[in-house]
Amino acid sequence: MKTRTHRCGDLGKEHVGQTVTVCGWVDTKRDRGGVAFILLRDVAGKVQLTFAEEINPELLQATREARGEFVLSATGKVRERDKENKTTTIATGEIEIAVESFEILNTAVTPAIEVRDDLKCDPELRLKHRFIDLRRRPMQAMLQARAKLISAARATLEAEGFLDVETPILYKRTPEGARDFIVPSRAHRGQFYALPQSPQLFKQLCMISGLDRYFQVARCFRDEDKRADRQPEFTQIDIEMSFVNRDEVMALFEKVVAAVFKALREDKRFKDQSWPVLSESSVTPPFERMSYEQAMRDYSIDRPDLRSRDLKLTDLTQWAAGCSFNAFKGVAEKQGLVKGLRCPGMAEQFSTGQLKNLERDAKGMGAAGLANLKVTAAGLEGGIAKFIPEAEQQAMIAAFGAQPGDLLLICAHEKHKVVHAVMHNMRLLIADKLGLSDNSKFAISWVVDFPLFEYREEDEKLFASHHPFTLPQDARRVAEMAEISRKGHEPHPVARMLRGGVKLEDVLALRNNQYDLVINGIEIAGGSIRMHRTDWQADVFELIGITKEEAEKKFGFLMSALAHGAPPHGGIASGVDRFLMLLLGLDNIADVIAFPKSATGRDLMIDTPNEVEPLLLKELGVEMKKE
Image 1 (tube, rainbow, N blue to C red):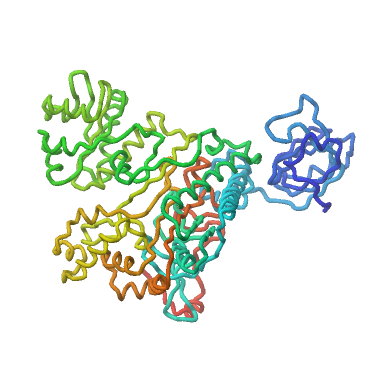
Image 2 (cartoon, rainbow, N blue to C red):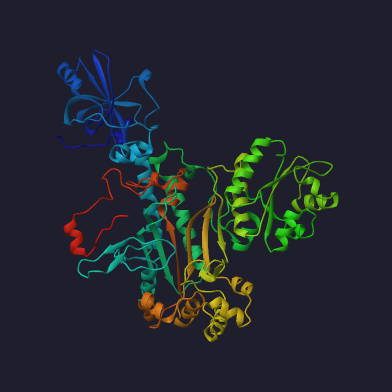
């Protein structure tokens, strides 16, 4: 094989007259009798090889052995194409190589999937033959963009004085909300490692070690139920800083985001792609900030899609408490939630059947129903309008700020989370119908001031909304509540605090130092200022029911580290896969991972997970039992 001088896609008019050697795969071949054309493809692009009988009849005859996906090496002189043969479909469309010699480096069987940009086939077939799928230009461009994203983030962080530190993959189980993958230890039979869901504790230890600024492109593992934006293994850009406050961490990450957008937009390799990131949508820090309370009030979700920012929800609970419609009034009296969405100008946009489908969807999410009302000049029309007196109708219309021709959708339920789920989904549907979900635009905002705790009635327990290592905004008040809990004798901290005179609403009003970055309704990064004092950490453990003994067993190393002079510190992590998926306008993170798992968590290409030899299980002390 001759030494390659150029990559196929790198050639241009400036190389006319030069003798070059290129290597790659046969993309297409056309035989016109006395002349043959092979389009040769490599990672840089495609170039046309021209074989002519008048130049070398034997060479022309030899091309007939070449087939699609054969691997070739070709040497020849670059020449400008005739005017009528020039094309804009490939970057090298103005030139061709008049081949003087070529060699078939390897043959190929007919692939199970076609190597074409607009491939449409069974997703599982693509995964099974991923090494072929990755030959396609969209997939190679995606991997180039992924590398560029990480490179831009790395360069920004290194310029800011961050140190890249690798943390262990063989980890310890921690309560982070998802199931761990566990790994049996042969040397310590009956004991297990866990694969890390994130490097959370170790990055805090880096700060306690005095490293000041840490980052890592970290591999993370979660044994979760499968969804389009989840994979059992994923990558995140992990960041931690010492002696910082919330604003400093957020400002730092805004630089990272801006650098990523700039790097992808300026990379000439991607000019043939139609990704949203390449649009002219403005991405200029500082980004907007919104409180958790505002996000839930206006959009019923803590990661609102602000491309449709004016499509806000209306809280009707106060109105419902004094209304005549018992279904709404009863919910309000039980401290439930009544919420509605004004759909501007859409009173006639839905058929009766379509409205019934919306109600069916709401019931599928746990709601008793979904009321729909049309606004007219005289008042309201719809199934429940007859139960609402004219004065109450006018008060409702005023609450919505509605106009004749609008459609109102209303959900009421004792459980607030049911109403939030229903109305968030209704809002997305209406936004899409109104054309407010343009993927070429980026609405970026921070969501801040999250609750410190959430309460689950079924468990009668508090849980950390973010994670238990997040610094409360009011550590003194948390300490007071923890002291009351320690003095009680009831089985759960909540019961002990209630007996001690603490109101549950006061506990749930506590806020933490968490911050999430949301783009177009997708959370692409999240972080917090961490706990750096053992007494504050013990107070939070007390309120979520982690005993001193349990804390010592699970987090003894961290508590010991905090006791050795931990600095105030905080950080943030961004999911590379989800971020890139958003930038490229895709809807499944499997499409931005080189070798992803299927929807069931299997690697179809290498056929894993699979069984292992009984002898190995015996060495590990693991016994398999049939279900």
